[in-house]
Amino acid sequence: MTLKELVDCIEGVVVNGQERLEEKFDGVFISDLLSDVMGHAHEGNVWLTIQTHNNVVAVALLLNLAAIVFTAGNAPDAATIEKGKEEGVVLLATKLSTFEAAGRIYQKLQ
Amino acid sequence: MDRAGMSLEIPVEGNNFSAAGEAASRVKKTLLRLGIDSQLVRRVAIATYEAEMNMVIHSDGGKIILQVDEEEIKVQAVDQGRGISDLELAMKEGYSTAPDEVREMGFGAGMGLPNIKKCADRLEIKSVVNEGTTVVMGFKYQP
Ligand SMILES: Nc1ncnc2c1ncn2[C@@H]1O[C@H](COP(=O)(O)OP(=O)(O)OP(=O)(O)O)[C@@H](O)[C@H]1O
Ligand SMILES: [Mg+2]
Image (cartoon, rainbow over all chains, first blue to last red; front, side, top):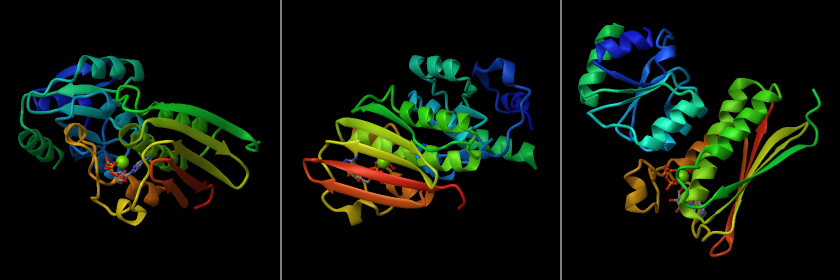
């Protein structure tokens, strides 16, 4: 599944990385605890979270995650967007709850 | 490849969450540039990030020292912070003294040191209360 298909499926907004939407991602990881993500997310995962501060970009970058999705209408901080642009990390946002977004992606992946 | 003698020292500021992660990022980029295997770099990056964040959250900052030599990649996190009184307890998954405002940011799961233990082939922690903490992590080229 491509990031473009993901955006459509969760009625998402592209905050950064418009040019990378043709890229494919490999699974989803959900957590709002950063060291849980550090310990368990896999390279190429899309990460669903409600954390909006700029350290999430550092985490995504270190783990080579495919994208961060801010769920439930949580908008990334200005510093997060800036850092995402600087480091080339794909940032997406959706109004859907984490549960609903995950459910839709799960169905689509079946 | 000549790995011998390469070393890098990166300062880490305490309590500065906007710069946090940059030391780990520099370590990762440096190792990739040296042509080190990406799975090994990943382990080093995760462990370095956790040690860096611990300095940011639990001490007043310090430095990350990367040394690449023939036998191993060595990363040291050195601070002059408050130190750890019970190391065995600190190593337990879920144990954390992180304050509430930091927990709200998603830190304080008490998984940082356990993550480091999983990633590093060698881990040595020296800590003296009110003097500081030194975390030494060694990574072998062949796991
Ligand atoms: N450099 C340090 N200086 C002082 N105390 C530390 C240091 N590193 C760790 N500690 C202590 O050890 C505890 C456990 O650390 P660990 O990294 O496992 O969890 P955490 O940092 O609290 O949460 P997480 O890493 O999951 O965000 C900390 O809560 C803190 O009390
Ligand atoms: Mg920690």
